[in-house]
Image 1 (cartoon, rainbow, N blue to C red):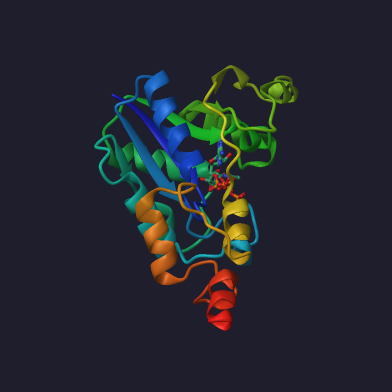
Image 2: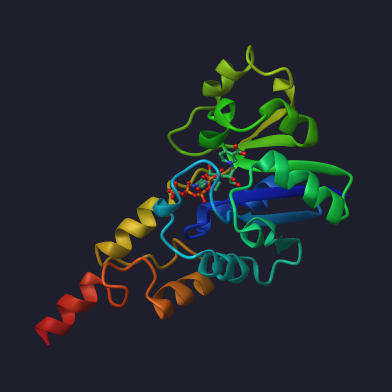
Length: 214
Ligand SMILES: Nc1ncnc2c1ncn2[C@@H]1O[C@H](COP(=O)(O)OP(=O)(O)OP(=O)(O)O)[C@@H](O)[C@H]1O
Ligand SMILES: O=C(O)c1ccc[n+]([C@@H]2O[C@H](COP(=O)([O-])O)[C@@H](O)[C@H]2O)c1
């Protein structure tokens, strides 16, 4: 069985992630994609993560609902401490069935691979899939070739490019703008129902302005 691991902060998970997961799965004939939301991020300031790990996990569950090949795993959330991918991957491989393992990332993230913990060891564990993302040219990966023993284990996959980012979605919410269709419907319901990413924790600026006017 071919399995893809898709790690991410998913703050929130959005349609860009779903397109990458589906198209990489299809292109590489994977039977399963495991979404692994970061608990305490190993590579960025924890305070830059806006939603709680539980909210982000619930949004991942809502996003993958209805796709029997997509599953989610809490390993990094339950750890309650930073986990580098090179630590997470062997634990998942021990616990779950699978013969061929891949780690799915956007091309932007792969181009930073030298700053990850033990990238060459990670590339022994998984083939790293670099999914195309608007604004990130795959030729930018060339600089890794001389620096990584296992550079040939990086596999670019051309995906439909959608210029959506979690940062852009959070910004739109703060501006009181709609994010409908940028995230799966179930994720939209969680964000609006729980008032996630709003400046006041409850209503958007647009909603407050509408209330003031009425
Ligand atoms: N629109 C997209 N197209 C291709 N890959 C994407 C896209 N959005 C995110 N990714 C990839 O998905 C993985 C997880 O991304 P992450 O959860 O950090 O989302 P993000 O949109 O990049 O978030 P942020 O804007 O907060 O940095 C990363 O490897 C990232 O490169
Ligand atoms: O292991 C590392 O050193 C490492 C450094 C940077 C990113 N990652 C992983 O890459 C995935 C995508 O990260 P992000 O910040 O784009 O959500 C996520 O699973 C991170 O844990 C891992």
